[in-house]
Structures are given as structure tokens and as C-alpha cells.
Length: 161
Image (cartoon, rainbow, N blue to C red; front, side, top):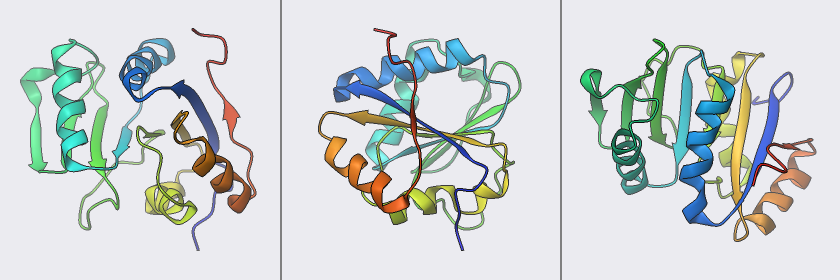
């Protein structure tokens, strides 16, 4: 059974889809992430777009050591030696992911089941944190999901912008 026990959960109110990318860059720059990260998107096109834009912005990704495993899955080493995995859900079978310390829902999953499945086997790492980006359009789904999961998801960066 999938559980959220021991997993810290946060959300970032991004208001608009166009603002998510800037929030993601701020997240990496602010938190000084030194762990493996899995970023979930809702489409293969978004995975490709996000990977391309992170490289274009000279962000946390190291362009020299990229390795594309499949269309919806991209491993990118962080400059500090950790890895970023950008993927769609569910996480493809047979993909070995070192226990991530952070899961980012770049696109909010459509249901509580998808939210839990994104954590899935990754959730065995009880020190893990989950951060979900929530746009105005996502808010009804997000509120319903929180209620169904009966869980506390704290707001992050409340007064950042």
C-alpha cells in the first residue's frame, strides 16, 4: 500500500503556467539541492521542453553529461554530482532511480491515485520531500486531492514574489 507517512509535502502557488519555470529555477537556487531529484510532467512534450529550457538558461543541469534514456525520461547530472530525472508518470518500469530526496510535481497529477503513484517505490525514502506546483487552474483539483488524501501540504515561498 502506498503511503505518505514520513514524507514532507509542500506546494508552491505559481498562479500561472508561465511562471512555473522561474519558480523551478528559484527552487534549485534557493534550496542548494544536494540530492537526487525526480521532476514529473504530464506529457512527453513538457519533459522535452523543460529539459531544453533548463539547459538554455544555464541552470542546474550540466550539458556535457546528458544521457537520454527514452522520450519521456531524461537524466541530467547536477553540477554538484546529484542527478535530476525529468519524466512523465508512471515512472517507467525497470528504471533504477537512486533514492531521491526531492520529488517535484512540475505538473500537478490529475488525481490522488496519480499523486501516490508518482511517489510509489520512491516513497520508501522517508526523508523525502514532495513539492507540487499549483496554478490557478489546478486549485480545484489540488483542494480535492488534499481532502481525499487527508494530508497536510504546506505552502512554500508564500511571500517570494
